[in-house]
Image 1: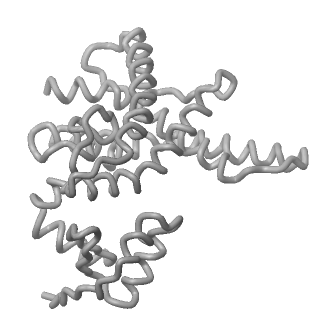
Image 2: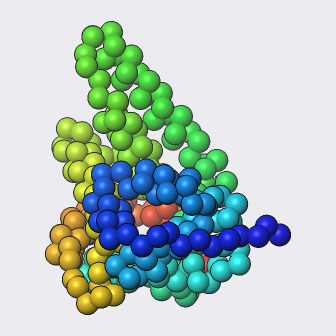
Length: 248
C-alpha cells in the first residue's frame, strides 16, 4: 500500500481569491499540485478542502471513503432544479440517490447503453463531418466550438429522449445557452456553498433563474414524450427508463 503524505499549503489570503475568480482555476490547481503533491489539504475561507489530482489516489479515496464521498459535502440550494435536494449533485446519500445513480449508470453511461447508442453517435458524427465538408467547399468560416457543442447536444438528446432539438425553431440555441450558463454557475455554486457555511448567501437568485429555465424545458420535453404514448414496459430511451426502473 502506498504511503500518502498529506501536506498543507502555506496559508495565503490570495489563494482563495485566485481560486474562485481565476478564469482557469483548474490550471491553478494543476500548478500547485505539481509543486506540492497529488493530495493537498487547503483552507479556503477557513473551510477545509481536499484537492486530489492523481487518478490512483482518487481511486483509493473513493474505495475507502465511498460513503463520505457519496454524501457530497454539498449544501443543496433550495428551489434549484440543477443543484437542489432532488438533483444528482445535491441529493443526500440514500435510496433516491442510489436510484438516480442506477439510472445514469445503466441507461446512459453503462456498456449496454453505449452499445445501444452506437448508431446514434455514428449518425451524428457523419452529420458533423458532412457539415464541415460542406462549409469547406463553400469556403465558409467554421466555429469549431459551436459545431462540437451541436454534435454533443444532439448525441446526448437523442440518447435521452430519442430526438434532437431544432436549429430553425431556436431550440438548439436555447439549449446551448442554458448549458453555457450552467457551466458558468459551477464555480459560483462552490463559492456559494463555501460562504454558506459562514452564513453568507450569494448567487442564489442567479442559480435559481437558470434552473427555472431548465425546469420549463424539461416540462415541455416530458409532455411531448408522454404524447407519444410508448408501448408499456418497452424502454426506448432514458425518459422511458426512469419509470421502468422505478416500477422494477
